[in-house]
Image (cartoon, rainbow, N blue to C red; front, top):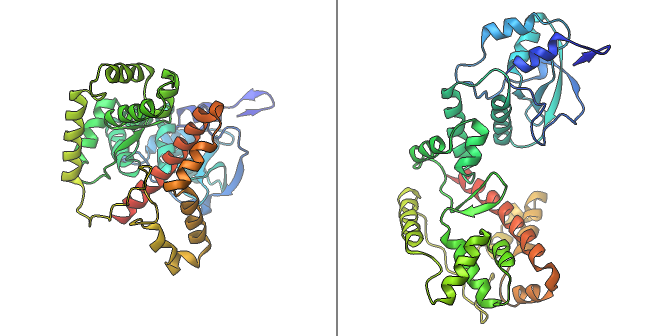
Length: 349
């Protein structure tokens, strides 16, 4: 913070604090600040196991001038980042404090707080980081070990160990989102099978197109095509074995549920979305039909229902020069629905 061209001690205090938002990738520095009554704010779900450091609060309370803005979750008015600053302001007798709003779920707000506190400021302890990573494993089970590790400031191997301990409690998923935002199956066999299906349907496809559509590396696409040319299974034995082990682990940790009726296959091998699927039953549910949010959800589910002749018509409607881009857009939409489904399943447990 600057006043009359001079850097105040408050700016230095902000860099000492429990993590300012400045410098956070895609963060809040471009948003305008607001001045909020301190009495309107709720304490954060802090990633600090032991809470705030009283000595650090005293240090900040002695700073002259306004403190750097805190970050507040707009929906709940909880402090996302800046509890030390908030307590220091109260200690000084301030009635208002400068803040920036964070929009999103409370779970995402916690992740944001962990990331901010990891990037800079008063360091989180190893216990703080481990506890934060464990919570993120439960709230964001589709995140990869590397993504959670980069957020909590841990190694990927440490996160993998924490996930293994939480295996009986955390939701089990078939795919995870990496640091690059792409969703990948836990076993690479699925991507190889997608590549095989594409090569069979379109032998003239380039390796780049196969890799993009199947969500695999270029080298993997080359290996799949070479294996098919030699009459071999495109999925190596070690990957098939790993897939079997993963299936066994997920069966062990997944609560038993009644088996759904399998959709019937149509003449072209795709699934008929009207037979055995839950959508027809959902359309009859008054709790969904007669609420605005429910109607929106039913509309989106119906619009995204794919199967039978409709699927074939859509495939044929995509021009050749846009197939890869449309495939990427479809994959992005599928990833969004996957996250939505995982969150619903987590809440249903």
